[in-house]
Image 1 (spheres, rainbow, N blue to C red):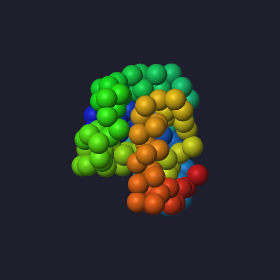
Image 2 (image 1 turned 90 degrees about the horizontal axis):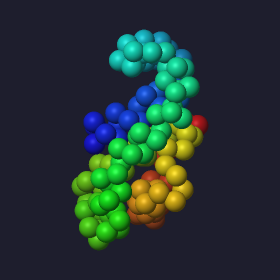
Image 3 (image 1 turned 180 degrees about the horizontal axis):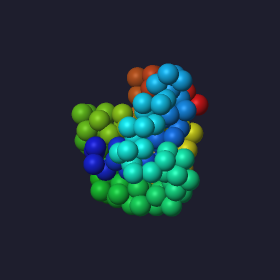
Image 4 (image 1 turned 90 degrees about the vertical axis):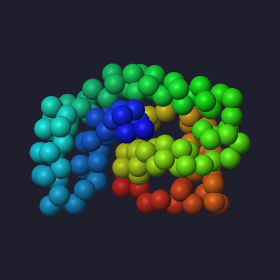
Length: 128
């Protein structure tokens, strides 16, 4: 998950994350993340529309799993579902960038995950 979902999301969301931080934390975040990315956060954000198709394609194994079952782990959510969902909640809380198409199976799975426990995850505070 770290090498696919988070690694794919981070460059597209880094500038949005920085904007969510307290002002005293932004300089460190910017400096350390620009070093990691090898570019300015604004440049990574400007390139996210070009990066999006490759990110979505990287999710094909997840999509293939969800084609045959409602959750990654089968008929009910389990560890792998919550692990992957955490990355999507993180993206949802720090950015309004649409990382999934509305008709994507992963979007449907994500909605089902958001609906669990009376929609508890939907109440997570958003910084955007």
